[in-house]
Length: 283
Image (cartoon, rainbow, N blue to C red; front, top):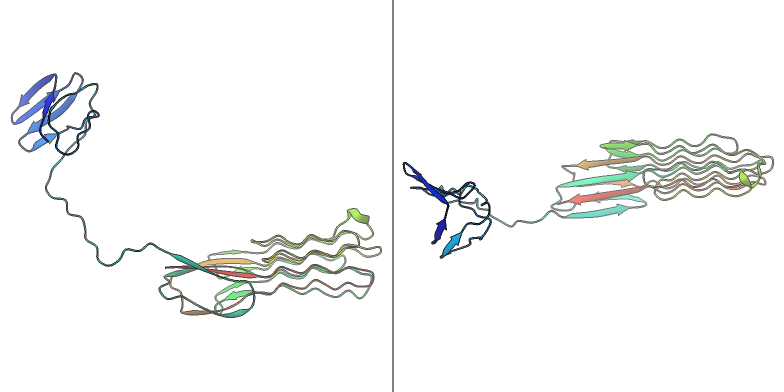
């Protein structure tokens, strides 16, 4: 850069020449070059010639020249990380890790248990939610337990195991009182980490199904002479990051439990929500 820097005062000491503005040093010059010569205005870029007067208070920084700066070299192609996702909502089979996949993130929930039924006699039992599994004895999200028939406790939630995080499903609620009229409802199904449980039925109405994925079924509503039924438990949840995945894993998605069948003069319970497996693949 060629040009003239105008300063208020100039001092010299040995081989160093110092230029001062009214308030501070604006530049020092010695045999190695110029240091401390960065100005707020004007802005210098490239080759500049002419006369410049420093106005206001200059901004000072250090300029150092120590030779050639060499950046590291790279070989091959630089690619951004990508992800793919596979979702399994039912059934069983074999999961195959894609080529080039460095890690997988598995999230899964077991199925919800069915809600209990109501009736004065001949009430059919609900069934439990199925377990979701990934790998042989690797990851398991257990299904929720059944809601009992009239005047029974709610079904317990399923547990998760093998994951970095394991969360049990919510417990189903106790059934309502007998002959309580339209203001009485039966037990709600338990909620999973991913879904709500089904509401219990009102007086003389059926229980509602639990939401996918993993919600417990609601219990059937009370009738005259029979209590309302309990809600089914929710499926457990587990998740895990697998840093060195195997080539293949067996998997199974839990099926939702069925609601209890209505007895004499009663109503059926709600079905449990199905399980789920999600596999995120990182490259």
